[in-house]
Length: 298
Image 1 (cartoon, rainbow, N blue to C red):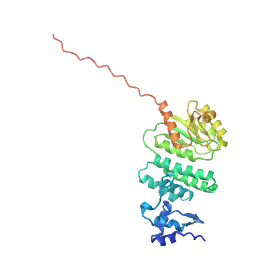
Image 2 (spheres, rainbow, N blue to C red; image 1 turned 180 degrees about the vertical axis):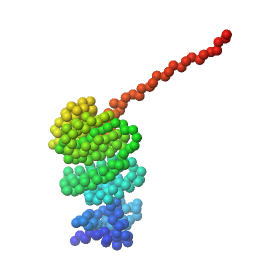
Image 3 (cartoon, rainbow, N blue to C red; image 1 turned 120 degrees about the horizontal axis):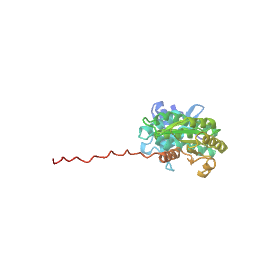
Image 4 (cartoon, one colour; image 1 turned 90 degrees about the horizontal axis):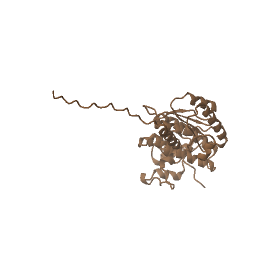
């Protein structure tokens, strides 16, 4: 007969530490735990993980994944916002830039959670709870990406009409701000006319990006691109997301650039557009230097 799991108080008694110390172990992913009916439960076998010497506490994951990334994923699945934020704060304190935190921790964790949901390992409710926590974390990280000084131009980012996944837009927006661009972030389910109106009003517009993660919204994305062409015919339109297969698919829907499905791909596309549009710095011609006047021999 399997042994009953332990509560955090029982674990604290076994380890001889304060309850809050055990809670911190759970929040940072050091001690695996499951929340059932609002109460954290710990498998008895896992208690040994925090009793071993630090260098023997955990084996490296078999797939080579960074432990902090695995801890973040565990906290997201557990809907533990405080614990997930602790993982990100620890990463920032260790010297990682905000851009690295998103690309190396948040993005891969969300991709793994999506794969688990697709495989039937996670329920729809689990995936939604994890996504809500991740969205709040990305929002909290937003201020870390703001940079002062001269902006390199404006980029408009939006999800296609009917597209309810706004997180790819938020991630790409933060990464572009880190690179010095001004970003107008319109979020999920952006109407075509609102997108066109925004593009018409913006000055120094580098590009417009549209995210499309579900196949049912690809036709709406195509109509939004038509509206954009009418409002700002010369502005490059980028299209990406899980519903867009490749560059040919993006072109078929009317876009100029395929951005793939990751935020760093959007950044590379914008950087390439900005480089092509950069005007060479003109050099003012130098004034002729008068020839030296030699004194006469009068």
